[in-house]
Image: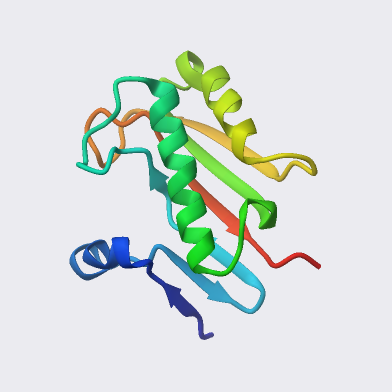
Length: 130
């Protein structure tokens, strides 16, 4: 099987140092690695909503590099530290980026993420509109 690696310029250092692509394309499917919501300086925003907004913005940046947009998302998984404390805020922010028809969604509660203090990571699968 072959696939194309998608690495926006902003993620080149991560690709080189951590050895993972921001996304890969195989046939008509784009699989995006999890995106967190850190600020540009690498810190975690104080506000959960700001963090969630940053994470969705990062998803959009990767999709754009693949020639896609939010409307192309067919499935996403969100990983949450303290899921029940923030899921409503997450859904509120999500609705700023996604709309009907709603993609499939799995929300998973976890104990921690790679960035200390981060509350969410979002990974998506997308495909060009049919």
